[in-house]
Structures are given as C-alpha cells and as structure tokens.
Length: 622
Image 1 (cartoon, rainbow, N blue to C red):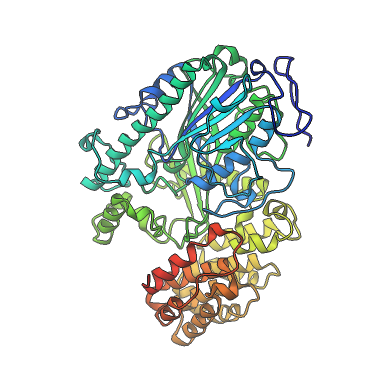
Image 2 (cartoon, rainbow, N blue to C red):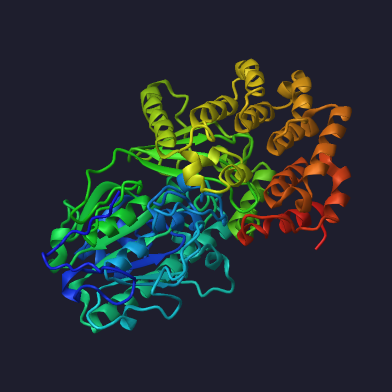
C-alpha cells in the first residue's frame, strides 16, 4: 500500500526525493530517543525488584509509562533486532535463525528508511546485527560516534544508544568488583542454589546498574542540549537476562523485557491512550510493535505488511489479545519452539521435543551457572524443577500459570482443569503460524533454495511452493509423540513435498528405538530420498537405533552429505550436527570429519563459523 504521511500539527512538509537534508522544521515532528540494553529482564527497581539499583530508569518510569507485559519476540539478539527493524516476525521474514541472513522484498523498507524520508536524522550507536539484508546508507550514522548532535540545525532526530554492559558475556567476567550481595539474590526455582549461581545473578544485577548509568548519561545530555521537552524517550532491553533458561529460551523468562516510554507535555497527544505520568500499562507490547509505533509517532501510517500494532501516535490500535514468541537455530543447534501468552498463561509448542532446552551452545557454557548446573544434573543432584532444562524428550506442549508459577516449572498441559486454557492458546498459536506464514517450518537450507530468485517472505506466500497448512500438519503429527501416528507418518513419507517428508522422518526419530526398529524398511527407503534433509534425518534414526547393517548404510549417507564443498554449508551443518549428536555411534566417521575442508557454498558469510566449530567438536582437532 502507499505510505501516507499525516500532518501532525498541520505543518509537516514531506521531502519530494532523496534521503538528504531535513524536510521539516524541528518543531513539527517529535525527536525520538531509544535507550536500549542487552540481556536483562525486568530486574529493575521500577518493576518492584527490591535488589535492583536502577535510579535513572526508576525516575524515568516515575515520569512516564511502564509496560508490565512487554516481550521480545525472540530470546536472542540478532533475530530480535530483525523483528524491530522490519516490524515483521523473523519466522515470517525467514530471519529467525541465529546469525542468518535473508533478503527482503523490495517493497519492505526498514523503519529508518521511512523516518529519513520524513526528514529525520537517524543514528544508531551502535550495534546492528540484523538477520536481513539492509540497503547501503540505512542510517545517517551507525557507529560508536553516532549522536543527535551531528544533525543539521533544527532537524528532528531519531537516535538509538545501546548499552552492552549487561550482556551475557559480562555476567561471567572475572575479576569483578562485587556490589550486590549474592546472599540476597532470589535464585529462581529452575536454578540450583550454589555459590556460582548466586555470584552470576549478583553480578548480573551489578551490570544492570551500569546499564542504567549509561541511560542516565544520555538523558543528562538531552537536558544539557535543551531537548528534554521536545523528545519522546523509550527504554527497553533486547530480551531476558543472559542467564541460562532466560536467553535463548522463548518462555516468559527469556522474552519478558522492561519497557518504559516518556512523552513530554508537548507531545502528550501522541502518547498511548492509557498514558499517565508514573502509570503502568498491562497492554501487551511485542518487538514487532516498535516499527509501526515509530512510524505512527512520525505521522506515517504503518504499511499493511508490518505485523505489529502501533501503541502510540495517531495510528495506535486496540491492544492485541495475545503476544507471540519464537525460537529457531541457536548457533549450530537446531530447535523449533513457538510460544504465546494472554498475559496470565504462557503456552509453548515444542516441535523438536527430541532435543533438550539446553543443547550445548558453547557460548552459554562459558557461564559458571551453566557448568555447575550441568554438573549437578549429571550427578543426580537437581530436583524436578531444576532438571527440566536438561531432559529429553521435552513435552510437546507446555502451559504455565505466570501468576502462580512465575518461574514456569509446573507444566499444566495435562491438568484437566486447564484444558480450556490449553486449547485456547494452542489454537491462537496455530492460527498465528498460518496468519504470518511462518516459513521456518522448512529445513533452513530449503528456505534459501526454494526462495532463490525471490525472498523467503514471498516464498511463504506462494502456496504452490510452500504448502504451509500441509507442512504444519506434518510437523504437529510428527512432534506430538503419539505412537498411534506411525501409520500416518508412513503415508506422509510419500508426500510430493520434501518438507512434509522431512517432518515425517523426524516423527520416527522423535519416537525412539521401537518406532525405528519396527519401521526400518521405511527409513532405509528414505535414505534414497532426493531431498538431503530427509536422508539426514532417516540416517540419524537408523544410526542411533538401528541394527549394525542399518547403521552402516546410515553412516554412509552422512559421510556423503557432510562435506560442505560438495553439499553447501547448510546441508553440511545439518549432517555434521547429526554426526556430533550420534557420538560413538558415528565414531567411524570422526577421522573423515577431521579431514574436511570447512569451506563451501553458503548463502552469506554469517553462516561460515558453524561448520568449523562442528568439525572441531567432532574430531577434537583445532
């Protein structure tokens, strides 16, 4: 649709061409400042946390509006930022998988393009890290030196300042000058109560205080420049804390973020309808809402393809009934999880129940909490709540009552009295997948091969190339773990669409040894499938659970598909991940893997660190 520029005060002059000088006087559009931080949830005084020391954001919340139910739609940085920059769910654009890269349709502009066209000076200080391609010159400046002070006189600005002080890497940096007393930390029910865990949590609080100080410094600069009365301020973090079972996991602990907005009196007419200084809003706000909200504040009607809901400005909408979360690949570890909340309950659908929440992402295991937690689990010292993170299989469905179980450790999915809630959220989650045309039910490599010549977003809307309803039904059938589904899985293994066959093969693997042994002939036939991902999954099942002769055939298949030079980086990554997961079952391949060249055809250089890590992990060679 055509993007319409609205005259906020009857004085807005739109540029006719280019992205150069300001098209409007500074008084005609609000300045907008985003203060952002990394890897922390609502561990702040203004959110009622008695341990937090966050005076600057507490003061901003006292003057502005605090959202109690704000979510990052992905519990890790790169896809979360992709959702923000586009206003589209990463599973819909194809940019969900960690440090991936996808093109977007020509008509889908990133929000700085809209703002600059409206006359804004747009700066980013300084992290980008998007999983979608961006046009050259997206920002007026994106660097550690980027600042509103570099704009032309009188030009309205949009500026981001991102603090990295609370990042996951900082909670484990030693030595650390401790401020927060570890003895005062509330250890969540899913973590073991050990000195390591307490120190990490205490250090996290200290780092959030440093992040708060960074935000305070920017607010002081705003006052010094005489801009405080002309500038709308947002504060938010990019996802939950960097502690394990928050970052990377799409539960409330991984998605719930602080979000505060402040509107000076001059721009109060653009504020959310429920805005009151010092107020709190229970409206559900998701990261896909940020781009349409920005456009609305600038008087721009958000385009129809944006999937979020503006919560301020002349185009603000009614509050949504649900918020949605999603998880895909984290580094070289594949998973597929979707979540939804109505504010009281959260529902998670695990489409890969055969892998644990705690797949070994090397970066996560650098945190002392992760290592001691794993040690306790291996020694049988964790209780039931502390063991969920490590167990396989995961429950296909999880339901938690956030009011009575804020740590999300008591799964209510099988409770008779919660079946109506379960059905309602299950239905909402499924409807959402279909509505946004979630393209990541394809194996990652097929997202790229099927969309060659166009984009994943456009592919997902072409029913002939991407029959989503049929693929989703196969994924649901495969992952429900019901043994009675086996005959239907065999039927789906003959489907003309390779993604349906991929999910059918996964269904056998997910059900374990007996399902594989009883259906070995079907899986042996699948080793000849024209689609490499179907062959890899069948090989995984037979190598792990089959007889010796079946294992030999399976390992031969994996050996053929592992080299990136001949198969490409994404097929190789999938095959190598299976070889690693098989452990000793795949030991005859370990020497071959060590001799592989890690280079091969790749959609983008962002993928190229994963194969070398897998080769090193499998072979033990540096």
